[in-house]
Length: 113
Length: 115
Image 1 (cartoon, chains in turn purple, blue):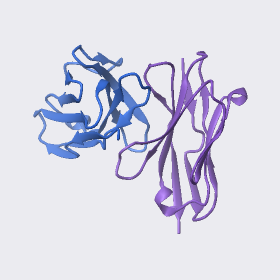
Image 2 (cartoon, rainbow over the protein chains, first blue to last red):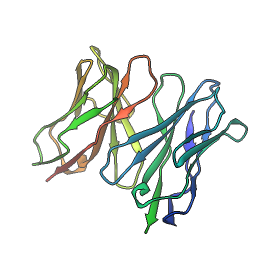
Image 3 (cartoon, chains in turn red, brown):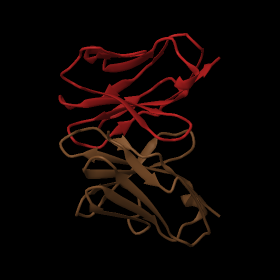
Image 4 (cartoon, rainbow over the protein chains, first blue to last red):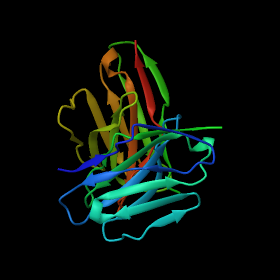
C-alpha cells in the first residue's frame, strides 16, 4: 500500500522567511511519481511539480525548490522569501505508473505580512 | 495549457433533488478523469475514476447509484448527485489526465450545499 505523510499540519511564517514543507512517502514500487499541488482558498488545486523515482536531481523554479531524497523517502518543498500569496494548503502526492494519486493530508501555510 | 473547467462552482439545492456537475478539459484530451470529494480541512478523497467511453470505477464505499458519472467524450465528464441529502454537502473537485502523461490537472471545484 502507498502512503504519503505530511507531518506538519499548519505552518505560520512572516513574509520573506524561508519555509520548508516536509513530505515522506511509502511505496513498494520501484517506478513512481511524486507531486506537489497548491490549494489556495479559492479551492482549485494547482499543479506545481512532478518528479519520477529515477530522477533525484533537485529542482528550482523561482522561489520554489524541491529536494528529493530516495534514501529517506522524502520529497520536501522549500519556498524562499515567502510572500502572502503563498498562503495556501500544499499537498504532496504519490502515484505508481498510471495509478491513482495518493495524497498526504496537506500542510496549511500561513504567511503574514 | 492544461486547463480544466468545472461548473458550477457553487450550487445550493433542496433535499431530494439531483445536481449535475460538469468537468471539461479545455485544451487537451483527457482519456481519464477523476472525481474527488473534500471535507473541510481534510485531504482529497477519490470517489471514482472514469475513462472515456467506459463505466466509471468507484472507490470502496462510494455508492455508484448515488453518484452517477458519465464520461461521454475526451473532454467532458459529469458527476450527478442523485436525490441529494444534507450529508452530501461537500466540496467536489474533478481532475483530468492527458493521454500518455501522468499528471492530473484539477478543476476549481464545486461547493454543494443541500438544504
